[in-house]
Image 1 (cartoon, rainbow, N blue to C red):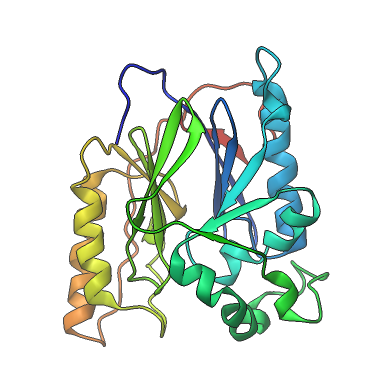
Image 2 (cartoon, rainbow, N blue to C red):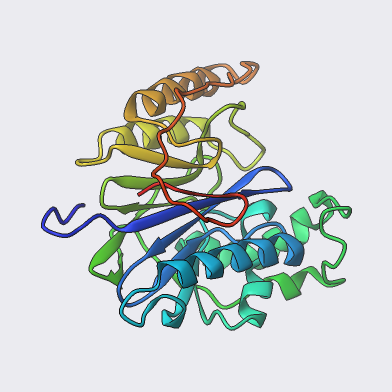
Length: 266
């Protein structure tokens, strides 16, 4: 999973409302990847503006803002992918997700459209199908090359049928399979038995040290195992209430001058 001879990739997180979503930026030498695009055009604009500013600051030897940006969606919940259309309108040309996400995104947009708080996203399109974009499927074991580093894809359905995990160096981007500071959300589309099994697999990934969740601060493998145990109880007892687990404060990297809401992981 890691390439120890290379310097660590530059990785940033932007946290924004609604839903305190974590979006991530990974900067390679050939492209930049943004993980999860937000709940609609307003949040997507904030995410894209913040990360474009980071790319400008990070520019060296003429790269930075010249890098093409691609987007990856971790799953098909509204707060993670309803920003795709805004990204596309701003020139992002490539979008990736699990095969199930590529199949289900249009239907999920219709099913979840009324869950979006309109005060946060007043400019959603009238037609939910306009939120869907062309998506390239990343099957289990696929590799997304960003230059100097690769993102390794793992299909791990459980929180939804569409969950996709990405690993880069020692950082694992989990989407909502992991949630810190609040109870994991187990809706009608969750399969707790698969979810718990997937978390145990994640915790055992070779070289994985930091697990970057869809909500909350980064955690370690011990946290992931504890959350797996809690979700396994839910698999056995549907009346079980999932626990809000909290982690020790994460030591973000020093990086002066970042835009509001952005912190550096690596």
